Length: 74
Image 1: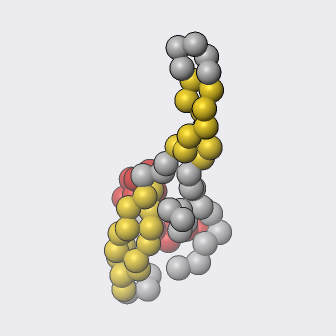
Image 2: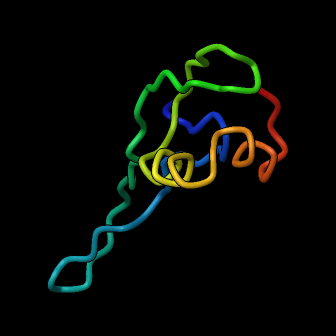
């Protein structure tokens, strides 16, 4: 399953709504990217499946601080 390794975000069940208001089920997929992230505290790369939102936040605050926010150990 496509799922973020840090936040745990995954696909959601939603509905298509037609002009006549008929509802059919569909999946809202998450934009998951496989990335190698450098962790200076561990002095190595870590391979993670991340959402694009995760990647932007990691660029701002760092991977260790972001993982700590969600209670994940690298």
